[in-house]
Image: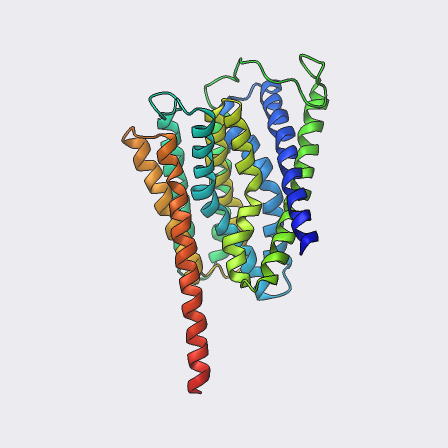
Length: 344
């Protein structure tokens, strides 16, 4: 147990250091290729950090030897948006309050609220279609996966065509070339991909240790796949946002979260739709409902001009509601199984 805990801590440290390298490298990638700051967060950073967990989902649903493994893959595909829409956004809010206690307008945020609101609405539309497919069955359902991949491709194209130019603000020196004011493109790409590799290693190590510790306490696999594993797999996105907030780049932090949500709502879900029956049980339906409620709350806050670090922090309450409801649902199902056994 002590070894697992120590490994868990070391994995978390590795992920944080890797994220420091990644956000530094990805900003230089945006500068080198003249990509708008918002697209750096919504597309480059989001896709990069989501790629390792998308590979894990692919391995589970495409090559899983049992229905249980495929179920875990589906749970991971829906658990990602749940964590990002609740815990990740809340962590950003807490980070802003901690780093800017006397922030603009007593907690108000100087971000493009209109664009952020549109991103949430776009996510809600995609995720609602995703959820509807989880409740029905029909011939050729798996080919709906193509629509989700196409939707993400269109989203990326729209973001990359942003009229905003790449930021002119000074960037921190590239970690791999700290003495060069403008590093070579090869070093920029090398650091970025090396950081992604370390993030992948750290994330997998963190998830494996977390599952071992959870199993030792008798936590059900279903609870692990929806409640605990996504907390670990979404750690890179969350830490990226925290690092950007610490650097005063709140817009990049929020863009990274919203862009990561778009990845999670399309690519892993498309894999699940194509390789599994994609039918939701009560736990998955609950996770979908809570995710949509949290994003709806955020969208309404943005539309009413009341967006602030404090209100962003409230997103954590939705995850708490989900955790309590899932726990009660699990206990009820166990009691029903016991009762069935008594009466047979």
